[in-house]
Amino acid sequence: MTITGYRLGRRGFLTGMLGVSSLPLLGSLPAIAQDHTLRVFGPGDGASYRVFFDAFEKVSGAKVSFEGVPFADYQNTIVQRFRTGNSGIDVFLVDPTYVPTFSKLGILADLTSAFGEKSKGKLLPSDIQGANYKGKMLSMPMWESTQLLFFNKGLLAKAGVEAPGVSPDARMTWDKVIELAKKVQAAGAEAGFGFEQVDRYYQLQVLPESLGGGPGVKGDDLLTVDVANDAWLQAGKWYGSIFADGVAPRGPTEQELYDLFKSGRLAFLVGGPWGTAEFNKVDGLDYAAAPHPYFAGGKAVTPSESWHLGVAADTTKADLAMEFLNYVGLDKDGALVAADSTGHLSANIDAAAEVLSRIPQQNPSLKGIDILMQYELANTAIRRPRTLGYLQLEELVTRAWSDIRNGSDAAQTFPQLQRELERSFKRIKD
Figure 1 (cartoon, rainbow, N blue to C red):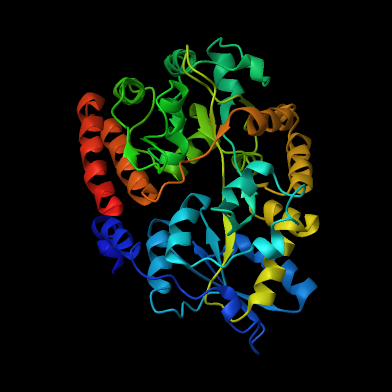
Figure 2 (cartoon, rainbow, N blue to C red):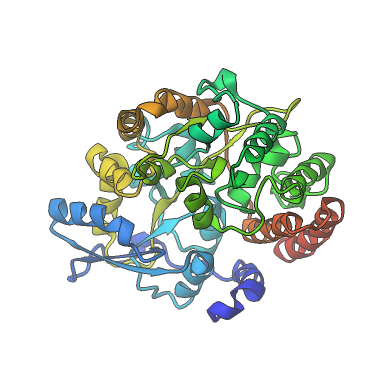
């Protein structure tokens, strides 16, 4: 499948692949090959991973080579690489939401005997849960995530808006945030509000979830579609309104929104804590962060999860792959390097505590943000549904949010989405 055919063809391709036979289990292959180079596959160009690759090379004496593809093509490309039973991959980055799908395809080695017990007490319990499927540990959690409400202190002060607090008790409703964003915009800000990951399921799942609408799927197998209930429609109507009102700009990409915030032209930005490293480099940018908003009458929920590592089921370098996973996941020093070099939170408990403590040390305006993030991860974090239909759910829901952002009516868009997902899921059930 070509990259140009990705948008139209990847759903049917992976749905069809769910019926193929599994690949051989890791234990039936030679433990290690003569070549002492670990082949890692992931999204992007791998530049941000090089620091912890180099660190592993120093402690192991091995070499790490990286091969990557654009993020949008990543999941489909993984499946294609394993079709022949000779993927050319030893370790690959795994979105934990795809663990059930990859398990059914047989492309993940079973890590249970190596790390099942060893990971307890070293990794965040919720991340261990995400790595396990049907009684087997199939991936090694590497990073974790949450979301914050960043704001420009200078723009708020100019508009006479009191800066929000960092305590979870100071959490604002979405309506309050937009009210303040409009006030700051009226006082001269170019834009009032923005979502870092515009339209993406990861960031917007919390909107209907806050209203009690669920993640869009339900049932024991999570293959019953539910994206047209009242909460989804209410969330969609609100989402469309912030773009229709002009308080949130329709056009900017993720990087363009970052640039707006860094240049002091955006009042509020919902984004990940990895943004602090970039924001702190900007001279004169006076900013801080507050708790992620929620809907009045609903509950506070926040996005979470991040990349895991998986061992390819057809690797001939099992021992080296396991050594790498242990270093990046369970070894505190390795986990710290992996987190620090990429700006992520760590799934390793000890490393996570150290990473969090450093953030307010790097910027006094972020005092208390470490305590806030610890609270969110323990109390408000939700995970994406581990359904065999997640590929379709993610792509089609993201497209629906995009349509609403560009002016489509949620009352028509989500029922249409419901019908399309039902047709797509039927192929998986059959």
